[in-house]
Length: 465
Ligand SMILES: Nc1ncnc2c1ncn2[C@@H]1O[C@H](COP(=O)(O)OP(=O)(O)OP(=O)(O)O)[C@@H](O)[C@H]1O
Ligand SMILES: [Mg+2]
Ligand SMILES: [Zn+2]
Figure 1 (cartoon, helix red, strand yellow):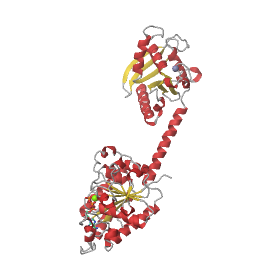
Figure 2 (cartoon, rainbow, N blue to C red; figure 1 turned 135 degrees about the vertical axis):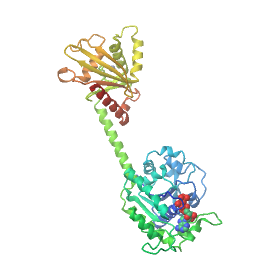
Figure 3 (cartoon, rainbow, N blue to C red; figure 1 turned 180 degrees about the vertical axis):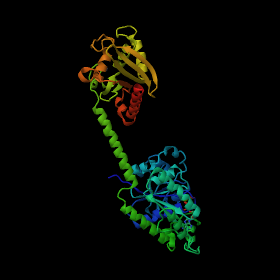
Figure 4 (spheres, rainbow, N blue to C red; figure 1 turned 120 degrees about the vertical axis):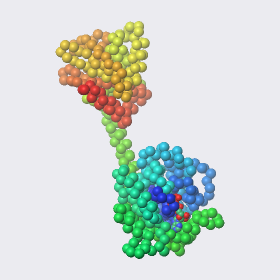
């Protein structure tokens, strides 16, 4: 079974609210309280706190870092097991160019899903809402937003607004009062900092964790020591209130981990796979309905599969298929210039016509009335711009008289557009698209087929106008 991570993102636009302290220590508590559950941590900032805290020994392969993860590396290539059994991915100073790759909001979710990382992933973000932070927010099963004062609480609204804009459920978002100085007391109902922050948060419709994190001189001192190390709360500040608060937060996280059947990464990935499967099914269905023969010469296409250079489709989609390159260019050469194959100039003219036809769409619309049969022939650029129009007489079309010049054209029109008792279907036309002879089926792939249908629709509107 494919493994998907449960993702926790720590985010706040305000700097210095305790994001990194929360991310790193939460990883340690989660791991310590459930040893068999993998916990992986990484950060988008370039302070290297995580590296300093967890690195057991300096690795020489510099490329196994967050940058590599964001380029699509798998868990095994970038996650290393560090101190306290916590998995971590080394930080990178090179995330600037990554922003280009992260235009979409769900890229990180997909990468996490495909990375094979299991257990819990904790993402520490920079104090901004750039595209990476946004990706981390949308990937998260839980977003913890530390707030320490009114300005940081004020800033939260941007995160909530992002979720509103994208129509994403905000139930993953929760504030956590941080750096709470319990010595500060107020008069009245909001008796202290955390009560005040929580009351304002709730009043604005923001969910708040039941726990908060106290400001503790001991905790603050953990990254200031002669060794230049950063010590965890679990091992070096057990005597503080903050220790109990982290245990409380970890329990809260475990409750949601245990009650989550499908994580965001899992849901998104499943959806992507289904979409892919749907596309594949639609593609196979499109392959199903193709004509087996080239309707110009009548030969089985399977006999010379490499000659398929054009795809045709009728306006009502009832006939579709590939055509030989030489059949189409020969047909157009005769139809447009009245030339016959044995004429000396035919070869040169045909090369010219073939070149033109390979660069645009040919549209063939027969106009049959009691006194005349003509063909309205048009050529369009692939952008749908009309490049050429020509009306061609079709002598003997109704009688089925072949004269050597129009034979190929008559065959194609009759095969593709014939309706009741051999007469052409009224107001129907057909268009011929150039395709890559090395991979003609590619024209039926989702995107290119959609493009064809946009053109067909455009032609339909143009002709009926
Ligand atoms: N519970 C706490 N008690 C006292 N000091 C704390 C506590 N938590 C964090 N600090 C201190 O607050 C400062 C900022 O913390 P931290 O680096 O975790 O914030 P941050 O939000 O990650 O900052 P940035 O936005 O710059 O990444 C640090 O000096 C840290 O030691
Ligand atoms: Mg930080
Ligand atoms: Zn043919």
